[in-house]
Image (tube, rainbow, N blue to C red):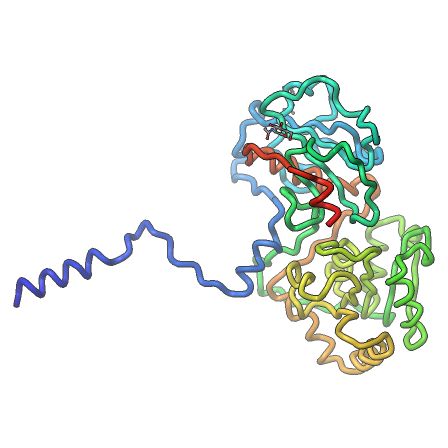
Length: 360
Ligand SMILES: *[C@@H]1O[C@H](CO)[C@@H](O)[C@H](O)[C@H]1NC(C)=O
Ligand SMILES: *[C@@H]1O[C@H](CO)[C@@H](O)[C@H](O)[C@H]1NC(C)=O
């Protein structure tokens, strides 16, 4: 009997998980989504100021062409996002030593004549940078088998160019609703309303029959402060995308989240928005049969503060940061993500057919 008890005890003891094994991960909604919410890089500095990579052996990332000549300071990846794992340069004489070369899609000529002539070193990876949606992207037949990495807004890109929500570290801070002077607003770019996509313009035309929409032109705001101040003064904001594609959810959605306003979205289906932000943080036009019903709902929420405030509960867990609105910084975030990627990832990869993947 005693021997039996000892054997059983030993078996039980042995079957205990070793303390080295990590505990099993519980799967909650938040954990599953978290991966997307803050999947972009922000490297934290070590206390003494040194970073993981020594400066001299950092991989070189060569920016072959500045996107639309919007130049930011090459040190900005470090100052704006604390990313410093690569040696970012626009000096083409470093081509043969560059681990990564970044190409801005819109700048590539149809005959590829402005791409590098010299043969590609074996270790070098070419990165395709495009922040536009397929509707606004020109097809270039020759780029089919040229690239190793994709950098776009799409979730299945190798590197994502997306302004992310981040998990809040300090959950004690209470959200204070900014003062509201307006009901519903829309900021359109200087080319005006008529250049908006057919979907968003015709929805807007219907909506204004039933509710007042205050329209502003982005050119009116010279400073980011004024822009976010205006968005925050509205109870609701029209986050209408210019073209409708899966994952194509841009800063027009981030602006109201960052400013403390409820976005009313028109774009991909609700489920796709919920891949990037909590479902209770926005109102989707598809939640209503037509613009009249949406207007009715917004007017009702305007009178019901308790129901309105429910759209801000998510802020106990997440923070939305203001995106950069300065012209010259338009591509800084995307390019710095590429910098981070080449500094931590050296895997061999080929994008088999870029056009087939992007223009689905
Ligand atoms: C970047 O790399 C080049 C070539 O190796 C080097 O001359 C330059 O000093 C580097 N810059 C930084 C900031 O590390
Ligand atoms: C990059 O892509 C090219 C063209 O598809 C391929 O020939 C090359 O081997 C790839 N290199 C790396 C390092 O992934």
